[in-house]
Figure 1 (cartoon, rainbow, N blue to C red):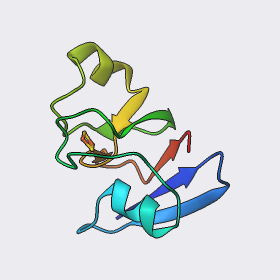
Figure 2: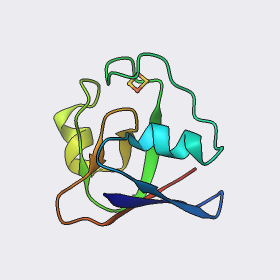
Figure 3: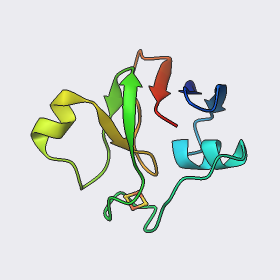
Amino acid sequence: PFAVELRRTGRTVEVAAESTVLEAVESAGVRVLSSCRQGVCGTCEIPVLAGDVDHRDAVLSAEDRAAGTTMLVCVSRAAAGCGKLTLDL
Ligand code: FES
């Protein structure tokens, strides 16, 4: 499990092991545009303000992954050892 801070919304939500960041954010009542929910369409790309991401999508380039400034919230998660991601949401 890890936490996701929604900087603009002013809330922090927990992401359980069996849940995605997208599901956790939606459960908190925050709307995020999504489509495929499988990491392939790019619709759910959200800016990352802090934290290390374990990128699991098929959208971002190697440069994007290394930069770590956005993530696809339907599949990607916090990296091992990173307890909190801060998103521009
Ligand atoms: Fe398609 Fe996340 S909804 S990449």
